[in-house]
Amino acid sequence: MSDELIPRVLKVIATSKRIPLETVTIDSDFQQLGIDSMDAVEILFALENEFDISIPDDEVRSVRSVRDMCTGVEKLVAAKEAGGRAAQ
Image 1 (cartoon, rainbow, N blue to C red):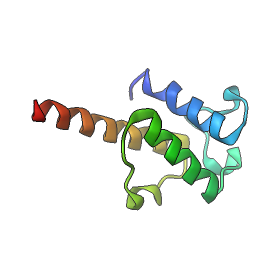
Image 2: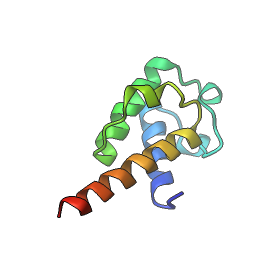
Image 3: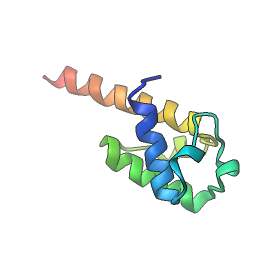
């Protein structure tokens, strides 16, 4: 997983949930952080803006932890970059 991507995702989660950044780690799960389904939607919108990606609804349902979220964002960013290179 990208060393650049993880801190960006952690920051988006902390900012969206209005919790201290140091309380959010790659190993945190949403329940530990007090993130409910409404919070998750807000975080996903923020991640879409941060990384200029579109997160499919069907993938959202399986995300239960920060690690899941980082993995999903990384896949979408990689797909976007591969698509951009293919279009050139």
